[in-house]
Length: 417
Image (cartoon, rainbow, N blue to C red; front, top):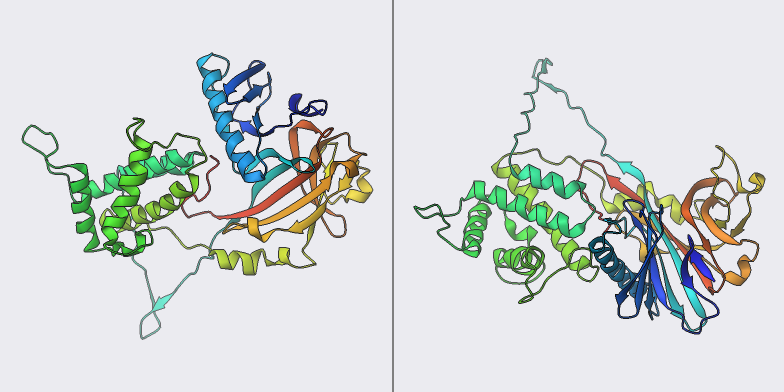
């Protein structure tokens, strides 16, 4: 049977193969537990292990398998918490997981590892100003960054791994700075004197006189302020701040609305920073690399034959010595057919996909480590898993490796869940 850390993926003796996924937890489970979460799905954790496995679907592709298994894994954690087994969070769900699905030939399992390998910072430039006689003129000192209550919410949005939590805090940061720009009307008894929607319209209209808000509105026609309010307040804010069943509700950790919320978040953080910089003022974010600069000038070598990497699977998890090659290490490994996969690239991410039918991996009883080498076989980097994956019963194994860069002085752009 195929297992991950002793947790069942599929049993080759069974005629009823299912899809599923494995995700990383923020802490080990204190006890073994297998729980029925409904709809034919089962969730499992192991004592002392920091992974959660969900199985039970009939997905026929990777995207469906990932979305369904993550949703049911979250449901399992809710039930395990209610039962007092473990209170844990799924972390790095987008960047680190395994998902498997049912193909006509059999079950296909994909490892996904997306890791930040490079921090980008724009080069600093020193400018010397002289007068007509060539005398150096001293620059005015940089004013200290002013503190504002909105910065608390902004900081919390930068440190969380949860996209929905980040959006909620960014909305509160915007609300805080808008209150500085145009306070909400109040009655003599201190209660609000206007609706939240009316106040938001009025505050954004005031802000628009100094900051052109058209560049922060979602695509479309008509009044940009109306489009901003519809996206950040009517659609996403309402769905993320309320749990009543009388309207749309975005449940934390669910993957279904991720893209919609993330696109709105990107505009929301830009809007907040523009208004805070103009009206508070706080610091202005420093420069950074654009996506095109990263792909063309920094990571462009990965698209060439000289810069090509090759991925290998190994049943050994020990670290390599510096400068060691795969050939001379004596490591038991098997080369996987590797290709650049541009369809999986992100704005600052280069992606590679490797695959092999399990029948070609007979020399590897299990997978414990993924090894990346250059074409000469020199080890570039490795990914070692906490648990062993046994392959018996699987048809094919795939590996998606994403190499990502980030601008160190720009707002956070990737969230795990």
